[in-house]
Image (cartoon, one colour):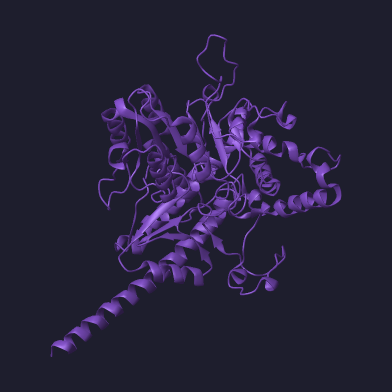
Amino acid sequence: MASMENDVGHDHQDQQDQQGQRMNSRDYAVSQDAQDPLRQIRDQFLIPSKTQLKAESLSSLEHKDASPDEPSVYLCGNSLGLQPRVTSTRIEQYLKTWSTQGVFGHFKPLSDSPLPTWLNVDSTASEKIAPIVGAQPSEVAVMQTLTANLHFLMTAFYKPNANGRHKIILESKAFPSDHYAVESQIRHHNLSLADSMITLEPPSPDQPTLTTDYILETLEAHAKDTALLLLPGIQFYTGQLFDIPLITRRARSYGIFVIWDLAHAVGNVPLYLHDWEVDAAAWCTYKYLNAGPGSIGGLFVHERNSQVSSPSANSSEETGWVNRLSGWWGNDKSTRFAMENRFVPYPGAAGFQLSNPSVFDITSLNASLEIFDMAGGMEIIRAKSVKLTAYLETLLQESEIYKQGRFTIITPQDTEERGAQLSLKLGEGLLDVVMRELEIRGVVIDERQPDVIRVAPAPLYNSFEDVWKFIQAFGEAVDVAWKAKQGKVKAEGTRELEMTT
């Protein structure tokens, strides 16, 4: 793992020696962008300008390719990905189909349209996402939203007290929606949270990441009575990438069903869910997949868990498939429109669908997935991401404000243990002013109270120059915040002195 980190740093050092440029110079960043094999992909996205971010009315907004206005530094793809240029075109084509074809849009292909018929729009998206998550197309369903999909998976596969198993293991600092989902599932089965929910605890606030050894030890300690493990592929707060194949393999060896929340991993790091034998997973599509705010979610169910067969005459089973919450869109396609009250699921993950999906949402998702094809796949995207985030890390560590202890980096240094995101923990009382000053400078990142900012250079549309610009703005913002804090402390001290004299 450490060797990759060293290789990345060595590559940067070679560039510095050959070109006589310091890594913290703008010229160095520009030279790296010139060598970037994905540099043309950036043009496929609409990047908000600094002026647009300050706009107060919708009517004042428009995107102009030739605009002299400086683009913002948008390093927030971990929260919401930027809009692909092609999205509005595909949405307009969808709306035109709807307005001119009505219900026939479900079944009637138009010869010059790049869009699938609405009846097949979800399966088309599944085929496009499958290589991004390392799955067979039949193992992927595009449906619902992330937390809803986690509930559907737990309803199907969390069977407490079967063979004495009832516990669910998750991290104590899980994204709150995951925590709520697990709590409600346990309560739904009239079980006690104290007995049935096991949480993985970070060592301390200053050490917020979880070691793989600790996770494996916890699995072993609770192996006999644990039914399900739910973990994130990448932790939303720290940016830690978990060892998905190892943890999955160990948990399954104990008979524990494994679900991964891949909200921050899909489109960020290469995944091989089928080969890793992950039981199931769910994700959203509005972060690194750039499908738009609140867009449709995704779901993976390994083929061994989604088989459909007819029970034999001597079988005690009522069905030949895993029982799940069911709806008509999950019914076998050959009988879906027969309108019979006998549910037989479509084999694979598609059999977990309930209602017909939003064509609008999937049209937006498919538009973004075109760009992933254009980029050449996740391995190429990840290669740039590793270099881009390592560059960000290096410039942060070389900065004066880092040496002065104004912030620390809580994301693991090992590139095998992180994706695009670095989480920075600021000194006490600096966050609000830092965020304000970054916004003034046209920099977009996000925060997690009380003291963490998340910086995520997305390799599809962010550049080395973006990173360089962020470093300049961040240094200025922290300086302003630090001086404001010192002034406040001095003022408070003066007031206290006046009150005692």
